[in-house]
Length: 137
Image (cartoon, rainbow, N blue to C red; front, side, top):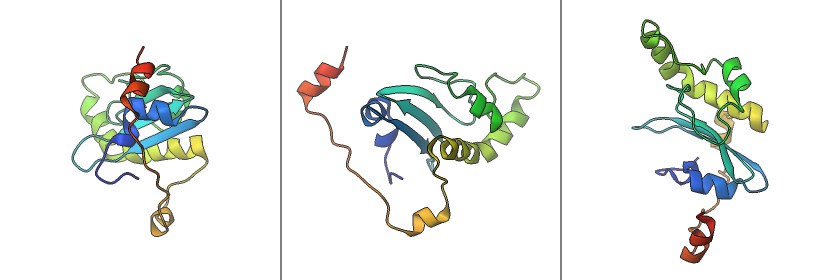
């Protein structure tokens, strides 16, 4: 959980945090869109807004296709006739489906008990300018 921020969800930060491991980020924002990110070994693999999961970004947008289908996140755009119904369903249930995917990927289920104890936190430091220049191709 990152109060008042987006730092843990931007591609450069997720790329750096995922070097040598996998990172799953579920963003629930109170006035903007929710978002799901999956990064592995320095690369953002798949990212999407739960209300429009057919518009994925990342290095391998279909890597989680089976999991997305399993949890009711469609990979293709709906027809114009079905759009309102699909959007309504995803607006209401998309966040829960993203948390279910995150639980499957990480073996950590997000529960109220996680919020009742101390939060595990860590600072995300900005890289010095010379390190940023080395990372930029």
